[in-house]
Image (cartoon, rainbow, N blue to C red; front, side):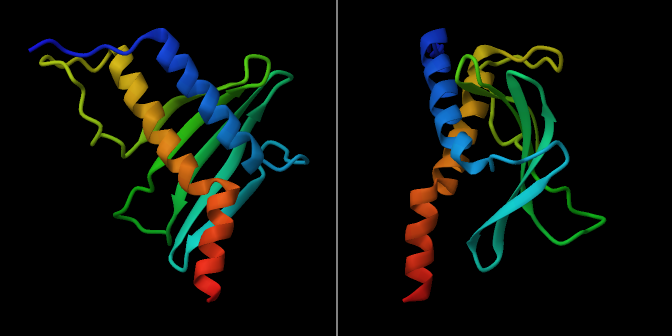
Length: 144
């Protein structure tokens, strides 16, 4: 059975969509080290931290906020926003090992294009939940 490979065009389109979804979630006056969060439900909060900022890029860490625990690792994604190219790319992630590679052999040092696409697709799904329109409609549902 032939394995499907995603093209560079599809990957860059996904980067562009992620950028457009993530940008409105970042406050204008944010500085490196600043943290902010969004409540999706009474017990579900997603925290964002600006890790790094340069003239053309920002690195944002996205994680689910949970009470501190010695036995639980909090899922985290680090995302770089390229403002000149209008793209956002996942740099690293914790606790996303459930995204299985589509190849039969394993190597710890090689991150193939399909894995990169799947990880950025995972980010797109998170950002869809965090979109301002979705957050407003969820808040309206909770109030009623």
